[in-house]
Image (cartoon, rainbow, N blue to C red; front, side, top):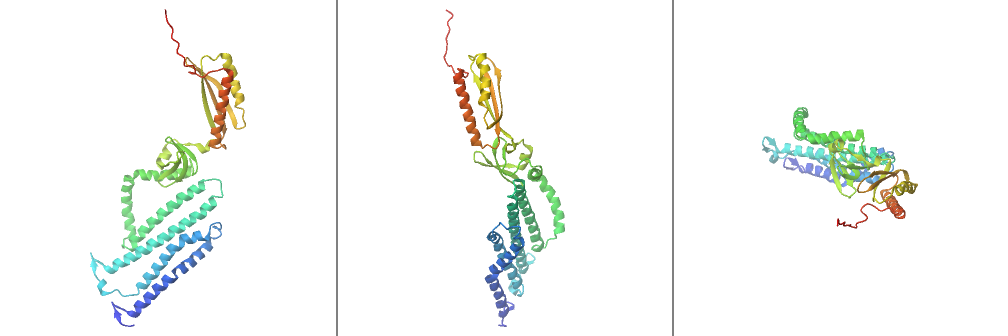
Length: 359
């Protein structure tokens, strides 16, 4: 057992191998136990979230982190063999292994932290769903992505510090200069990022709103750090840069208090003034329906081609689009029936061609 092999005794190899094997066998049990302890700390805040959802998020990265941590600590007890004392561009092979181990451990730790952020966001979303206001859900999605980006940046800096032995202070100073140059080069992306904050704090729209922007109409499905995703009424999925969402005139249809229907009746010139006087009150009576909150009917214009009667009416936004279209169809049919009873023809209804001769 005391026989040396590659600068280490067989006993040392067996000792390290036993620890790593034990870690492989119990890592899942230990990680589940630690995850359950962590779940108990947040159980009150996450009472409606299944424990299995939390375990699915945390256990796997916790497994990897514990296994890597125990393996690195155990292998550090061994002496590096002489065969490993080689240099590659002034860097020893042992230093490369240390850097790889430290970088891998940091990456797995960041992965674990990202999963914890996902779970915290899950808890906050559960609470936000209890309120009618959708702004909370919107902010949760935004800040979840924002903190993930910050955490990834911190992870990269940690890898540079512990794997590549870079001075982060000097690095940050250099990055500030480089960052200014990058900011100028990526000005549009920075503008979109700033616009995303404007959207969240000014709140011209929130997730779930029906909006019309750039001749597209659809529901806001997601507001990200760079762009806003919209599911259009044609069921397509478009992405609009946040800067454009801030600078463009947006019609937030969800904030309308009423739906408006417009109808322009172009009546033939054969209609008499008496018929027109009787028509507008008849249409007003026709529009006296429970679904219609207010309406307007008037002879808007007349000319050499037609008499134009403007019919506008408003309904409540509580109606669905399908119900609104059915109401418009019913009103249109009733107006057509009214015109037939009154003997009034629409303009260009008579297509007869009369040829007069001077002889």
